[in-house]
Image (cartoon, rainbow, N blue to C red; front, side):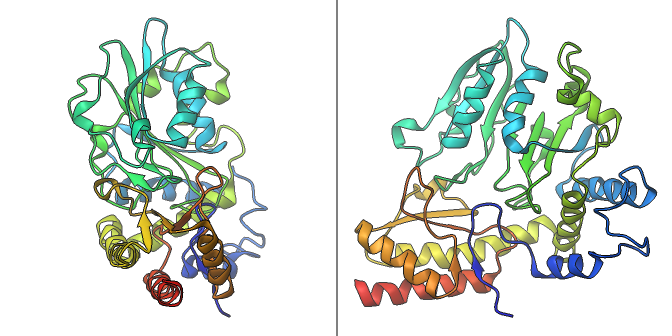
Length: 362
């Protein structure tokens, strides 16, 4: 079997070992006589998967005891609404850092719930550079400050997070880069991430939320949208996306077996360097989109001198087994998403293809 060089932005690559293990357990899980997709989410076997997955998240990401780990549905897009529904109160504002398409979508959703302000924006830089965290302007009545740690479309990533927010909770969408590098969780009030980029398949969203924010869940919104509902029920209030949670469980075990999050960061730096070097050493044939100080380890965006050459690049790359290198439809260009599960060999193959394409077309 020849595996594709999968650079899809999401749903994205999964570790081959994880897929093979899931294949082995697909028809019958742990001697139950059925697949995990067929069993009750109230069963002891599934509760074990649920609890173990939460424990693994805590262990790998260094999550303190005063935080809940929730497995929810609706993707990060549902969190765009749930966050202001749970945290934004009359007389308070939701502060947002506007860094690209996903941050903008979160901001737009919050406006349906309450008042918002923009604490910082990189719109003038065409979202190709992250704002300096020391330049954020956060009002005293902010209910929270929302950031998108990595913008998948633009290929930009925050290299650090603010530490001078006082009592204002920091909220972060980490859908694209969760578990790709160590993070001090205590700096955050809430972190959320759709699983389909760096944690597993689509269908489940991880929310890491501090106790005090859970306790503040208002009682005048539907129960399904309240964090305290899911925290009290250990993410089993309603039928969970059980197979997706199971797959996240396997991915977490894979990360642990490969040295944990710190090891993932070094692997990611080594493999993405191959592609960034191909861009930087091309004498202008390839043009990196993101400013060097904001470059993402998860999504590498670049252009070629003409759109015709870009189309040719995509066509030839597909003929050579590469998948997902066409840029997002809103911005065009080219993009390679290099999440944890994308192997070093795929990045090496892409760098070699880029060099060969340049030799033939430069």
